[in-house]
Image 1 (tube, rainbow, N blue to C red):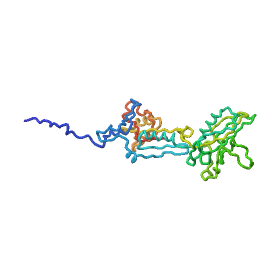
Image 2 (cartoon, one colour; image 1 turned 90 degrees about the horizontal axis):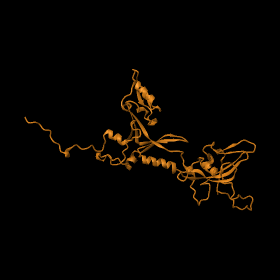
Image 3 (cartoon, rainbow, N blue to C red; image 1 turned 60 degrees about the vertical axis):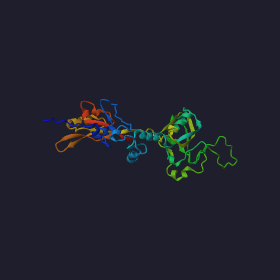
Image 4 (cartoon, rainbow, N blue to C red; image 1 turned 30 degrees about the vertical axis):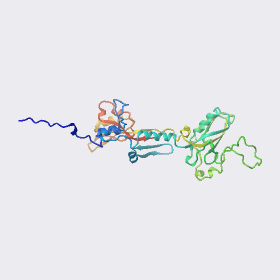
Length: 346
């Protein structure tokens, strides 16, 4: 009886590598950043476009893919704070948007300060700098940019007046931002080079040329312009000290000076993803809940037998501190990841 031999297969007849779709473990590697307890700073981050070319998967950033999959979801929005998610976007583009928020969105800020009298301990240039950093409650879209050749008018300039004095014999006082008085008709300081007018009824020329009062415009008639916060300390005056000045605000962007930046800070982070590799029940579940300092996990009852099981209740709150995977064998129960194309922006 002849021994049956295993037929030989030519290298050219080997099965083809699957095309167009990655195995689950490689798809996780491509779309997630894994965080481990053994190497807290270790990340598996494959970015180059040809990483999976042999399997027919293009890992590069495609304009069509971005156009079809990108979306922006606003999570929280109020006057002082905004949180939103950018989904389906590369980290480079997310960072570009962050830099645009900081440097390229226009706002109004005090640029020129005309000081008539300052006997406080604060130098003129420091006082002007502090005034420039006061946020103003006004929509910059209502105003035009002002160039060096433009004349200050009602369409490109906002004028404020400040006059505060501490009387002799009294205690020290604080000069707050609510003392900035909006002058809708423009500057009240006469030009130093202006000669006295022959006609006493004519208005002297000032540092602005307003054709109309700003409070007569419908945008500002019911919404007066002023500082966003009324309790910002500008200076402190002792007995006999006085500040009298006029401040002119114009439109600008943060890349010129930080006072025009519309945000105090702008940052983002990848969406954390907390996955339970197996069910965590009983005392183990209670221990897991206690291990997390930000309360990501919760306990749910299973049926009517009184069994308890751990669940991932608040994955968005995870700070990736890795407390949940520290200790013996906890990395067999929990794994931490970050989604590469989902960014939480604040």
